[in-house]
Amino acid sequence: MPDIIKFNVALENILESINRYGGTDDNKKILREIAPCISRYYKEIDRDHCILIQDHSFPLWAGMHIPFDARVGYVRSGELIIPWNLLWKNNCLTDFQMSIFKSICLQTMQKSSDLETARLDIVDFSQPKGELSRRARSVDEDSARTLSHAEIREVADDFRKGVELAQ
Image (cartoon, rainbow, N blue to C red; front, side, top):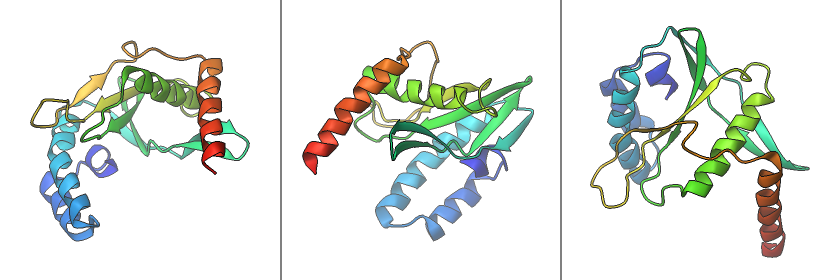
């Protein structure tokens, strides 16, 4: 994605790179399927400039962090926007899962001095159930409920219990 957003690399070059370095045949197929959709979406966005983003993480509990690897952001009219792409072919996030995801992203950004004023732009490139192809759908910050830190902690504790039982 940084190639598309920051460096404005042509789709043909991206597809060529996928064919050379895209991993397994299945992985290449998925990347070739999604690349045109991502390219179209980001080519239409006006932006002043782009920046590379350092890795961050959200602490779940001691020794367990969720990586926040946004990689690239762009500035439009003085506002830093952090795009996050969802690429599910099937099993799109439920409303509650989207709320968890969004809340963790926002809380991670708020704890980072370089991202605390940025706006999160979740772009869902998933293939909706019953549809034949993927399409870009921007998930407005207001459309998914933001969970409190206590609610996230409760979900994390349930997850931790499941991990401990599985071990």
